[in-house]
Image 1: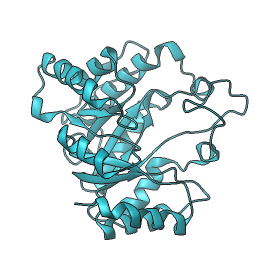
Image 2 (image 1 turned 60 degrees about the vertical axis):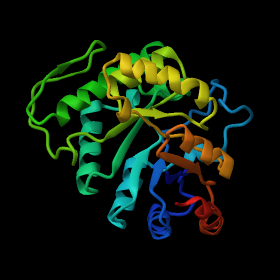
Image 3 (image 1 turned 135 degrees about the horizontal axis):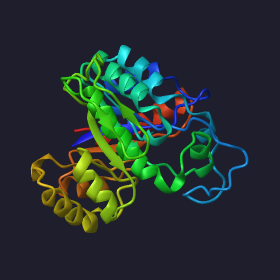
Image 4 (image 1 turned 45 degrees about the vertical axis):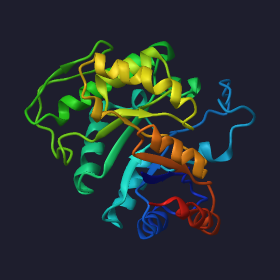
Length: 277
């Protein structure tokens, strides 16, 4: 099982360049970064984990810019977002950014996508909260049209469209791996099966019960059962937990690093190194 990591990189933490180099030197498989463009101080949406919103949420680096730095100083390290809030982006611009990063990194990019939890943040992007999932689906389909080998038009149901266009570079493998984050449920699993390569379940709880349901939706959509990828995300590891994921067929797990300085983060990396294959 591949062991990757995620971290809230901010203006106060270890740098993307230092972290990426250390991850690759130690043999970790990848680096995934979260996204928040801003956190309105008038926020009424409760923090999903309860309590006060941690400081790092308002200070995150732009994940694609930070991953570009990481790509430039590594050769093998996987690069991903966990997650990109697709509904909050211009999909034409985002398609170009993703394709460029995947092209320049030699196909190392994974686009983790999701719907978000902060209503005020989404509202500032002009996103209607009740339709954000459908809007995100449309924008991902539009992006795929721009990644297609031939000029391909797309007309979405929520106002986004693109005419048949020349759009280069293309992602290295035609399209990056796309994983969808979110809580288990029939709507999420149907969208995973229809649009993506798999699931990014945060924390990895309840997989024993959820995976059979997801696999059923996946096969019902006519997808190859062997192609489904489930990547437990932001996991605090233990030997038993990782062995359980491996038994369930997970080929990658993403461990949570603290949003700290070099000394703290590298110390935790040294602890996590015992889980490397």
